[in-house]
Image (cartoon, rainbow, N blue to C red; front, side, top):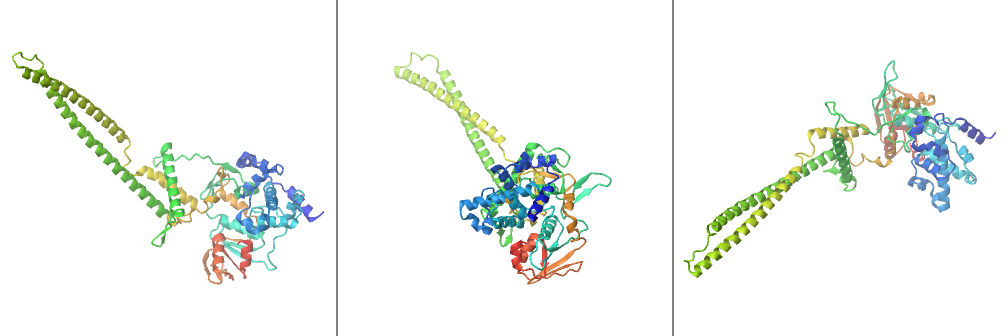
Length: 525
């Protein structure tokens, strides 16, 4: 039996035991696992690419850098995409067993496996960048060897990122040690287990935020952790234990979203990220936006009361007109009444004509006064209606009252919780840099706790590499790196400061024994 046949056989023998779990069927909505088992049609391969955070029908910018030959023609692009998506499908179907390049070649249909070197390149790329062979899986091939002399790496912090880095670097063939200051693993992930009970509670990170394309879902299958769907409903209770009105909750949540959108617009569209040389934080932006919203509210109130005053002034003028027209009508009515008798025959013709004309003028003027009186009354009623409607539209005295601000503070606190820092320490320019990489789909919790999940990731092959109660006191570097801890570990590395900064940002660790820059670029440490 060849090595390829042995690897393929072993991989099939180690099919994921959690594949048929009802909870994972619900977790991967719409039967995505079943979809992956379909033949090599568009649906199954689309699902594999989507669940690996890659576009199904095109190369990413990173892939174009590593595979310029795959973009030479439409045929070469389609060939690359089929092989890449098929390898992803094979991995996701059985993530408990390492997918070797030989196994991938063996399971690719003819003629797609004819260029074995091309398949190995694609497999190596996917493995190098963590699209396959990550988490807990049964290894079939021997450990990767970078050079004749194994490189050594120190990782600082046994949180989720530190544990993931430990496992991947160990798989890549590095000699790794992980320093953790606490006597427990997990970092911000910490699960409380009640004694003599199955009750658990996550005190830190607790939510798998989105399952579509989330590698944690794959690792949950590997570690046989049970997911629990989180309802999207999030009732909020006030300080008196009363349920907050849903409409009020929705309005405040919408206000929070608009404030966040405004902050993003200021930073990324207007390009305003600092004032007088001082970098703006999210707290600075949010406070300024709230102050501007308050100013806008007060301007609205000023405009409102100006309109209110104008209406009252018009009503006063119209009321004066009504009074005047009423007096005129009463006066004319009296005059007309006094002249209603017959004209004496003793008057000469001119006087009689004058009296008749005067009586007619009184009647005409009375009709005109009554008409203007009625019109003024109608205008007054219209102004009253306008005033009543205006009163219903009176702006709030403040943009957000104290109770609403408490609700808004809940959303601010939640943002701090998910960010792991106060708003004052979050950069306005960079705090949302990972928004485009967020996972969609349902949110999940882990029945036995997030901490239990991370503990299961620490398998026996890496346990001895973790040093707990090892406080890193300092990391000093110029052309060399020195890590000082309570274990008296001194580490040196010949590497540029810029590359070191990338290392510290990525894994919070350092390496030694002349770890060359070329190795950085190759393995992305």
